[in-house]
Length: 251
Image 1 (cartoon, rainbow, N blue to C red):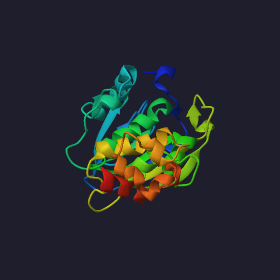
Image 2: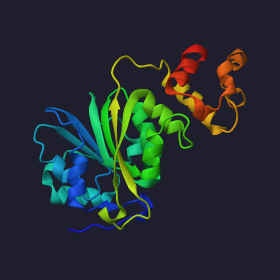
Image 3: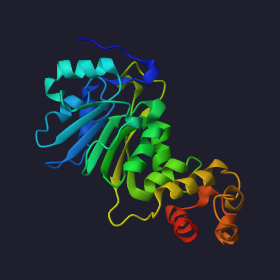
């Protein structure tokens, strides 16, 4: 049984077996853990996860043809596939879980916003992205690529850029280099009391990133907040701790 590439879904299939093994090896494997693979495609990574008999596995895949292929090729996946657009999916487990995926380039940022929404249950993410997106998520304040995803993800996760994945590892080869990162959920209580408001704050700050926060956050924060000396800075100059300070103090 064969399957076809669908450019509309941003599909590039990983075929380098050594790279597949290397990516799976990045998961912090423990018995009885729950893993969700997003966008399994033809099962390049999935087949190695199936070797772990002590985990609970679920896959989220929107492509009808890939779902049929996976069920045909790996019958043990019959009741493990969530046949749905991941961006419309509910949390796959009631308890904590880890995520792995060769994320389609065209929805990799929305997937990260989904991880933000799910973060209270997400222990770890091993994700492959276009390299510049992976670097943006992992970048620190002061960098030109430091932005909304950097702040939102780093508020809840420790992030490590792991390695590059060359175009030749895929069929068809993409025109860009890919990168794999690890997100490990931070311990302790949530630093955010209202995730919706916090995201609103961070987005407003970066939507006009060349302006000072005093100008960028008009309409988002109360006028008294705009008197804070921190408002002289631009969004890319603020650390995670400073964004949290603004959230806790003025939202």
